[in-house]
Length: 152
Image (cartoon, rainbow, N blue to C red):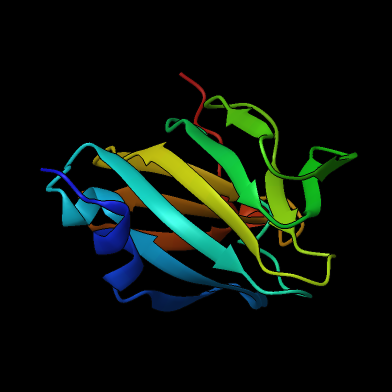
């Protein structure tokens, strides 16, 4: 399906606040949903000044990427703080390093975010010491200290 720039402008965005981080708030327009994509998420996000895009996290199975359209901010990539602006691209391979975006500028940070939509994924939130198990629509969040390693 095709979306024109005018169609995208008219899409109603959904304000999303991350369930683990109230400062992670963004306006989300799901271009992928609007065009019927099932296996890849494509989102036009707007992060207002002073907010983060998400909680600092790493996917164990899904890949995601970000292309900055406008605004300025900081990409936290592991321990590195990388200034970002229009035209910059960030690739987050599965099982890579934890990441988040922070809008430390004065204008909205607008990005195109894309990622896989696997039925199953594991997401670690290192700062919170939590792990999310996502299994065919069911989400289970656990403290990492409660995870038992099984030796076989």
